[in-house]
Length: 261
Image (tube, rainbow, N blue to C red; front, side, top):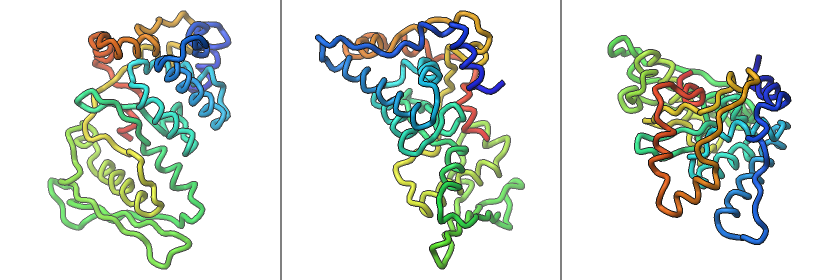
């Protein structure tokens, strides 16, 4: 069963009734907290409409990220709206740097979608260096052909320069090098500026509610902090310990797994 089907089943069964209510703001209070919450609610509805998705499904998915700063969440939703990328299909993701700063990013799947959507895309090839180091090519080139250009664009990336400490670089170094080369070549070939396509070092994040749990139709656990509560806590200088404790888990988030093809 797909994620969309699982979430729809959970919504129809009433398991997520309390989690899918739209954010309500007090018309008498026009403070910054209510304005930010209302803005996130509006942007999430826009993204659901752009993806032809039930807004409740997207709201359920977003309910696992109440600790994400509102500015980052707004950027994430706007990124999905602008490029029509679906977070449920791991085309865009929310991930976190080692210093606990959140980042909205486009995954490899999302990048392939953007490339194949380009009307002038004429194909691409990859070339490995003949030289090897520990049986790994020392560099790799990506060549992208555009139908409206005479010469193709060629970008070369060196393994030692782009490798990081993620386990995926130890398990599948050639694939990771190919993806990093593709990311830089696509940026230059199609002007995909302003897109974060990789995070050098990130912390693992496990949502409190998974798609499998939602699909079982049972009662879902309540979030520790709603977005309004989280914003109030941050403005008052409290709630930091609650946010950190909610993020600590030995398991890997499905979105962070999307960084490892």
